[in-house]
Amino acid sequence: MKVIISILPFFFVAHLFSQEQSQSSTEVYKKRVLENIEIDFLTSYYSQDGDNAAVTGGIGTEELIDFASNIVISIPINDDDVLSINATISAYTSASSSNLNPFDNTGASTSGNSNGATGSPWVESTGDSRKDVWINGNISYSHSSDDRNKILSANINFATEYDYTSIGFGGSHTWLFNEKNTEFSMKGNVFLDTWNPRYPTELDSYLEADKNLNNGFFFAPDILDQNGNIIDKNGTNVWNPKNFTFIENEARNTYSLSFTFSQILSKNAQFSLFFDIVQQQGWLANPLQRVYFADRNNYYIGNAQSIPNYTLPSNRDVFQLADDIERLPDSRFKIPLGMRFNYYINEKFVLRTYYRFYSDNWGVISHTAEIEVPIKITPKFTLYPYYRFYTQTSADYFAPFDELRSTQNFYTSDYDLSNFDANQYGLGLKYTDIFTKLHLSKLHLKSAELKYSRYDRSTRLTSDIISLGFNFIVE
Image (tube, rainbow, N blue to C red; front, top):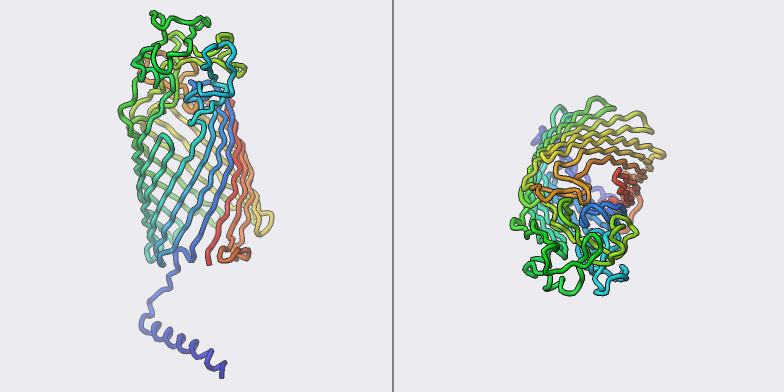
């Protein structure tokens, strides 16, 4: 009797199903865009070092350590719609940004300076600017048409750190043609950012003291000339950063429009093209970053004996007073365009290639080329070595430390805008289980990935990053 009862619902459902089919023989089964809630978790550790810090005018330590965690939750709302929530927290310590106030420095020697104020571009300061937390959140919503040939999406974004806040929004539209072998998408984004500007201590203090070197911060420490002599603060040959003013426009707005075309060429090959148009407006320089002019006299606070070795890491106790902060045009137009080509060689090997050309109206032209060769070592494990080469020309407004001119309208010593080449190479290992057999309660592991890369730039900046990611399905 129990068997009869248990099979009755089956016959009842089958009867209803046959009725529905007779009523609507043209109805087609529609697969859900996303079957279950998915959770992606990524954590990474990044470290870098170099000797061209922009905060100290193009020389000095660039040591930085960053630990970041990112989580993405994708939630199927119904058959057609998916809500995604993306959150990132990044905590870093930076020797470079710490020298926003290089004189707050318990690690530097005070020898040769009876007034105690000292600093160096090569020594990390102990001030508040040496560490910060960057927080970013993004919410997106996508809708797919019944035939899955059109996808509409919208997103909002928020990010903040101690001197910067960003609010963004955007949307995209994707079309699939030719039995989904051809894809075209168009995406637009707007970011409305606001500076909460922080300035180098000596420049900020100079205006706060009403340009009087006997007031405020400058009352106690001696100021030295290029020869190490103590200057008369009431004299005529004194430090005078006359170009410096506080920034008035604290907004930075970015508008971007992106186009992507993708085509499956054969069962083994896929090709895609992308093209972006980006317009930025507002304060595009960084108020933290100092500049030094070749046509202005140099002045220092600290140990006079270290002045001859100022640009060397052996300098631990003297700091050159800035002439101004970085200043750049209030608009920038960028055009990146590129292509990808992927080829399935056989069951073991896949070839992935990438190229991008970039140009802007600041004079920067760059080329990026990347190759990746995933190797399936077992049905569940894939090893993928990769290599990326990057080269760029210098921006029109860049010059190294103490080589800029005070008569220029725009200037920077940020080596991110210099002429350089870079090589990045790495190795990743990915575990994939489409049946999600490994699980913890309702979290079923779909994939896990471990990745390491090394970055070397011709300006002697080096960095290492290791990341670990997991993709879970909630059942």
